[in-house]
Length: 72
Image (cartoon, rainbow, N blue to C red; front, top):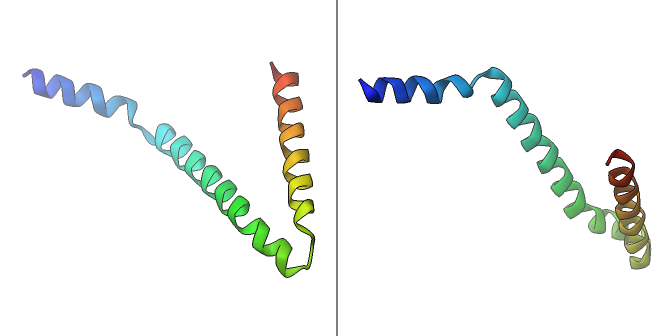
């Protein structure tokens, strides 16, 4: 009897909304990691100097910090 209650309790929180949010989070993290991994090779094929990668990353981190500060 107690295993039925435990199984019913665990299956309630795992619904379509939780799975959808989890899948969206997975795709967002995956796309960010892929873009971060591929960007240096992409810039190298365009003949851009390595310093530009640092500038791009610095601006990205700065904007992220300002957004976090503004949102609290």
